[in-house]
Image (cartoon, rainbow, N blue to C red; front, side, top):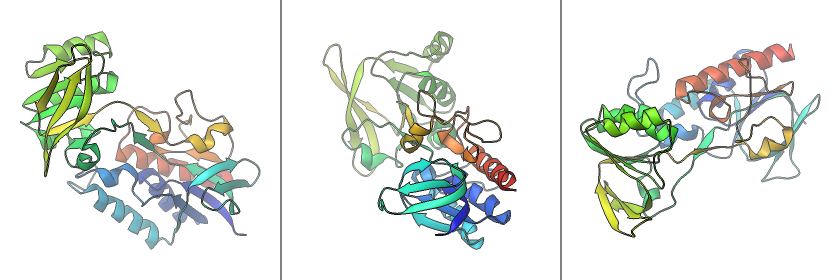
Amino acid sequence: MSLYDVVIVGSGPSGMTAAIYAARANMKVLLLDKLAPGGQIINTNEIQNYTGVGTINGAELAMNMFSHTQELNVEFDYATVSRIEDGDVKKIYIEEDPDRVIETKTVIIATGTIHRTLNCDKEDMFIGNGIGFCAICDGEFYRDKDVVVVGGGNSAVEESIYLADIVKTLTIVTMFDLTADPIACDKLRSMPNVTVYPYQDILGFVGEGSLEGVHCKSTQTGEEMTVPCDGVFEYIGLMPVTDFVKDLGIVNEFGYIEANSRMETKIPGIYAAGDCIVKELRQVVTACADGAIAAQNASYFIK
């Protein structure tokens, strides 16, 4: 059985950057993912804020990153990690093949997050094509257009304030009321192009070839309405993909992995990077930085 220097779990921007840095440090690398390389960015129509690239389709950027790993002969395999066992040699168990055990000196966990979704009518049809999850990434595409934000928490309100300066009209539809910081909520409500509809249950999305509106129902009166729009941003929460490491004691109460500035967890030889860690800003560029730091310190650990 081959012993790897580092196994990277997750092939989004952080995982692929970690693989590139690890390979360049002459480490024996295995990159694992249960899906196609790219993570969340493959669902993004266009990315405009990745330094030096300009406007690029998310799937294209993902393929460019993966091609870079292959130029360095990084080994890649499709696999779902079921658990990681700590020790002088880390053991990684694979869900699809319970008899398979991968042994490695270090591990970098870069599994990212998944967005909570509404699971309502036509949502799957419009995700990535009218429904987005990041106003900072995609807000510019809706300049002078009509946009709906679903959610009323801190992220929803902060992103809505940002969007309101870009779009023609902004409508907030939330199951409860705005629950973010009161000062931020007051600022949002005071903006002239913003309308807030609290206590709404989202029934589905309207449109055929393109998104045309959001169909919702008041939880107080039962009245239904459709809010016309060109785009929707959902902010009903994120879920880190970390269930397979919860028994290691490295995650916080919300499931995010706690890592320091060197991307070290509290278990020597286990690192974490990207959106699955406790951090302030989740963007492609910050994920890449995390991956580079994790790989560099994994290399130092081995040496």
